[in-house]
Length: 187
Image (cartoon, rainbow, N blue to C red; front, side):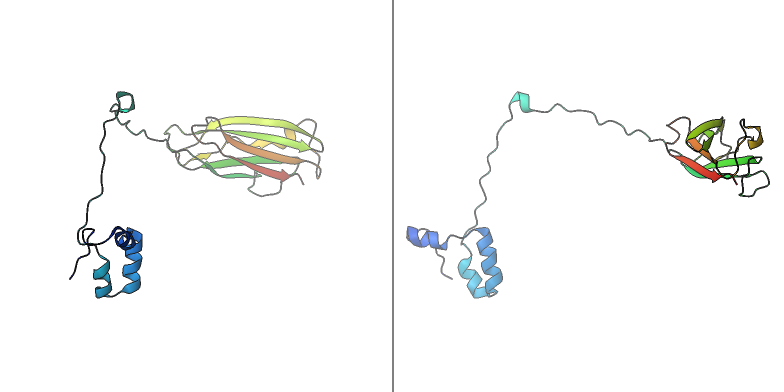
């Protein structure tokens, strides 16, 4: 095989024969023939020039220690909140006693997670806080505060015009940040 080197080619012929790697790969793929590729390959491959320098003192980085990972606490979530009358039914009247409870996921604290239950009466155009109770979940993650008797509300609740809202929320944001709310029409 005859090798065409810059020694036996004129400058013009040499520039015509010099290919970039991209052009070489295109030619190899396009031609597909061994004879055609052998004519395009150079006789010698040369390594690229690499320049090595030294960084100035202000650009050098001091070694640092890698911080050890810290555990992220698992937060709980209120996964269910429930309101019913004392007999377990869903109808709430002005004289009903409300039975409520909320369930929390990940009750990791053996002492329980502290929740707040707020009962609000929403009358036409205004609202009134009826009760706020705070307490801890049990080992299963349930908080069941004492029942609340609607017949003790003064002035009395109107049938058909009023709505009771029960809001559940975490007292400590480190325990969880969501809330849960029930809105019940008084019938």
